[in-house]
Image 1 (cartoon, rainbow, N blue to C red):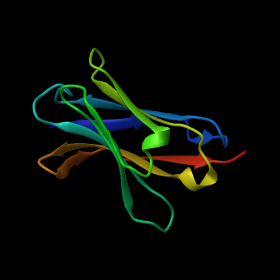
Image 2: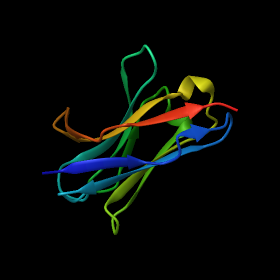
Image 3: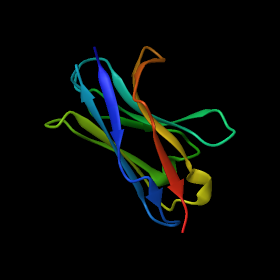
Image 4: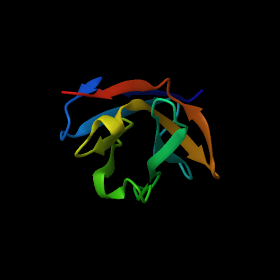
Length: 118
């Protein structure tokens, strides 16, 4: 059973960089052909896919967030991380990590609330 767990600060100041880490257990992030994604849901809005890092290390981003988003990984810890720069209150959301295969997301973390406020 694959399990994902998000971790990181719950409060970030405007203009700072939001950094979250997803720890994966029950499966390796280097296993073909899985992609490891970040998704968020802002208050009153639907789910927004932010980006993903593939099993071999290539990364992909939503065009609307590409200029501010970076996803990295630490294979020794079986973790992958999200970095979102220059945050504003509009980036306040519940952030989820998930595993993606063949175009659908099959395992999700429980989500972590991040609030952007001074």
